[in-house]
Image (cartoon, rainbow, N blue to C red; front, top):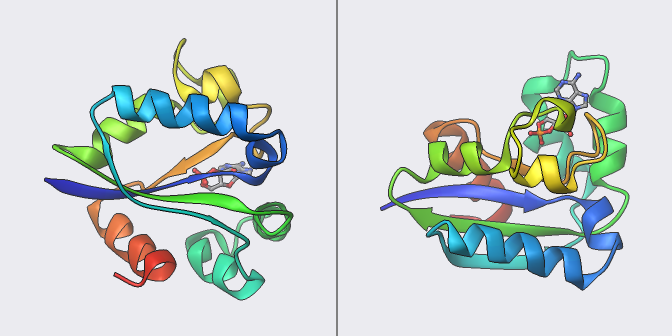
Amino acid sequence: MQKTYSMIKPEIVAAGEQKIGEILAIINRAGFRITGMELRQLDRALIEDFYGEHRERPFYGELCDYINSGPVVALRLERENAVAALRELIGATNPADAAIGTIRDLYGASLQNNAIHASANADDAARELGLIFGQ
Ligand code: CMP
């Protein structure tokens, strides 16, 4: 069983429990077990570290402000082939390019406010789970 990290982003959490519940139901229906879940305001320093690979990108500062703007739902998910399966379930980074029915198609508002994060590969999943859940 593979583990991956996911994170429901602040604009969805700010919109209320209904959207959080709908997204968790989609994830659960796709066969993931939720083995860690926390509603949490992430420290700015942790966010900077988490998104460190984007440090040189022009959107980095705004991205860190945005993730810092309110609590997120941090998730540790388990399934066979979890990393790739979750990437497919959430859709392309830009909701405008996301396949119909994916989470970003249904809930994403913009390239930045794209509703949910999922680890890009198994190494990132281990790094991100370590940063957020300490394991
Ligand atoms: P995420 O999958 O969490 O990874 C990096 C985040 O940066 C991305 O989702 C978006 O929220 C945000 N972002 C903003 N602008 C861009 C961009 N031009 N390319 C990629 N990601 C971007």
